[in-house]
Length: 129
Image 1 (cartoon, rainbow, N blue to C red):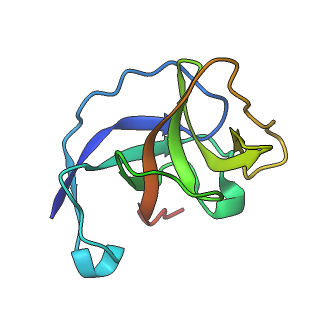
Image 2 (cartoon, helix red, strand yellow):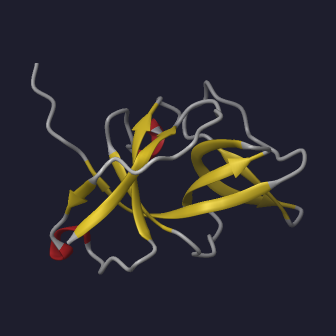
C-alpha cells in the first residue's frame, strides 16, 4: 500500500510548519502490523527529542488522523500553533506533551493542543557509514 507523506515533523522544539504532500511511502501491510485507512499518513522526523522511544532523525513515522490518543502514546500534535512529535500525557486531567530526551522540557499548552495523528508504525532506512 502507498501512504501519503505530508512533509516533516520536528521531534525537538515545536515549530511552525505547513504540511505539503511529498509523495508516498510504499509499505507491506504485514510488515507494519496494521492495515492503513484513508486517514493514515506519514511524516519524516527531524530532531532528537524522541530518542528514548527509539525514534531518530530521518525516520518516517506512520500516524492515524482522527484517532483519540491514550496516555503514553506518541502523537504528532499542534500545540499553540506549532507542530511537534511527542508522548501524550495527562496531569490532573489536563493534557500535555513529553519529550523522550531529558534535554527537552514538557510542553504544556497555553491555549490549544490539537492531536494531528497517533503513532502506528515506524520506517527506518539503513544508514551506512
